[in-house]
Length: 149
Image: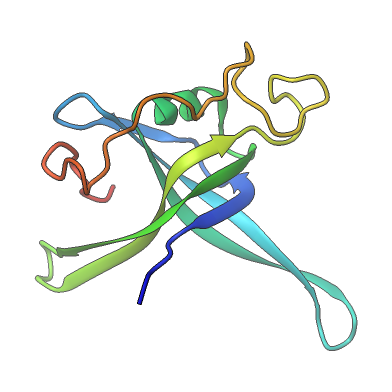
């Protein structure tokens, strides 16, 4: 059976981007995104249920994202799910973490580099997510240090 792994999220950053560089100089940008699910409860009252998602963006598009996004800013992310597993050094237990690897991003809301806001690219009219293929764990597993931080 075929598989499909695609995630589309729009929400607000929960913290400033953390940027570090892998052994080959590739940027690894990590941040949190809060996404709300709005629904009516049994009494008819509207409620927001937040979900907090960790996101990682690699390479030049990650550096561009970090340049323009800070805590509280809205962002639109398109990517895929990834599961990392490791042994906890302190306890020796197996640990795992599910997160999103962003393949593309767009500005949303006011101040996105285009008059009136909305989806768009980086200031200057260049979409922030375009460019050459960025390395992935599948294409260069030894090139990127994926240790959670």
